[in-house]
Image (tube, rainbow, N blue to C red):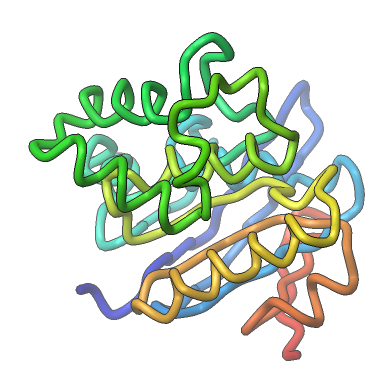
Length: 217
């Protein structure tokens, strides 16, 4: 395991001549649950997309789990799990069928074991044969997390994963993420919720004016 989970140096990204990320620097340790705050349009989603190699920065260095996004993008992508606003699930497939599909995409050897492990972790064992379109919003969110952790990634990147969840579903999400960092893995998530920022994070970051400020909690 590398010394740092994430290292970002001198990162900049501009859209239509408008700077979104500007000479941004941040280091994130293993075992941290980072909550990233920022106003709408501050660049939180762009930052996560850069970390996941979905967006190429204009300048700067991004290293995740020891892999440089410029020279080893495939290895980097294998080391992360990403949960965005879309769950990337197939409505007419069951929960287990969705995970089986993604397990094969990841090239996992023991598909059934991986699917069972992830369904258990997110508390959806009893819904394995239920079609996604019949699941509640909270259950679909949890299944999206199961999809993201199938390949046992070292780093999880989540964009407002608590959005639209009821209290019970939020509590389950918190439990899942805490179990993840207990294994020495790292989570980076965005949110607008001050309660989550103060109650979930091991460290809080604020993205403003294209740069990240560190706020100890």
